Image 1: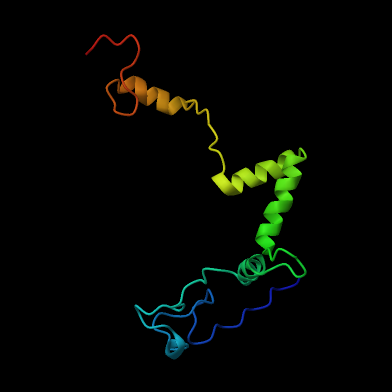
Image 2: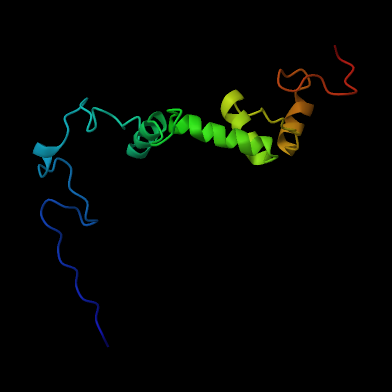
Length: 136
């Protein structure tokens, strides 16, 4: 019959679960003091690729006789495609110029618990009076 191997005793600064004991001094010198952030600058607002894309769009197209920027050339190309009947190009142009159109949403109340609450609380601000309720 095999016996289970005995577990080694945890180090003096750890509990049997492996976690450090309360008041453990290990690592205390490298911890951030209370009220001091580990990331004072915060997350950067722009990514490297975004900055590079903005710089490219603002630069002029090499060899363009009109001196257009890449952004102007892209808009012109989209506009020409839209005129030729490319719906996705037209949609992209209008979305960028005017913002995306709002989409209507049809929301129907189908929560049985909310229906029950509305029946029990006929004068609730959320539900309003229940049909057939004669109280006013």
